[in-house]
Image (cartoon, rainbow, N blue to C red; front, side):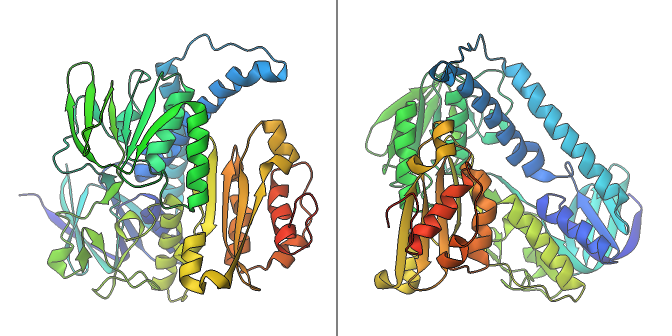
Length: 468
């Protein structure tokens, strides 16, 4: 039997993804002796199998699209071939560089011990870590659960062969020719976009809900659908998946109404599930709902005092930057700084398809629910009036939602590169700015950023290049 050693910490963190390592770095800054436990790689899903590699591939797709569009602007460029191995090498280089930098940050963090091994909550203030060298029991005055998420599938739909999840999709040895994508959320539309850009002959999205990216403002969903139709990306909406059958060369998908689709791969992109099973959470009395850890929304403390949870295991948006902020909040809460609670609606959301979507705050529907149909105002500024957008050859719009005679409560944008405008958008919403406040700011010309300024000018009743 392996020797057991006991280590005393102010804070033990189970999981070193976005939420976990952010909590560790902030805790170290605040003088808390911290243990950061991870069985896989430091950085978690986002760095190794999610945000960073997918956006790297989307950038490659953007380069391919630029080449195809070159002739229209007087530059004749041809794409001789797409090299999947070369794309993977580029992706791995970017991930590796960031991984090395993060390892250096954690190693240099004062008061933070990085412990590799399979961690499990073994008591209300202990985490047992199994590794090749034996079992080590860590004792913490406080515990942070940051165990992340996994790619979900549907009941009866087994992953394997040509039925793949997003992690497998990132390392395919080829670009699929006619893939089917189950799920029209962020992951689904991003893969549809990149595969189309990289030369897939046909891409089909199957979504049971009425719209793609159904959590966004409906105007953005409809605009993305129009753009995808123009790009030749097909989609089936409003009818649910029934079954999938695969052979050595392809997959046949059948919907509930009998409609069938055939493709060479089926990407299952139906969301991510919380990684909380068999980690000892429920045994210690922590409240769990459908796998998610229930927390106090202000402090992120669980039903067990002294145990906190952050990131994808907490109900809500599964976003790396949400995890970062939650990790910082928990470290500051434990240190007694009483940080302001995170307002979930104020978290910026970005979909990196082509065209891109950026949004923050309430959708029009949510605003109506909160303030009533007569209690809000909306305005759409079309990118057709924005010089830089015309140079880029993109269409789209910026939509504002405000409380009537009050602050802007939602900003929703679609267009090429529009995600870069999310910074100012989130400041406007989170600082509860009035249209008049933003209208008084000068936005550089010619930039896409002007579109935000123009929209606020119009909503403030003094449009310059738009109609009120």
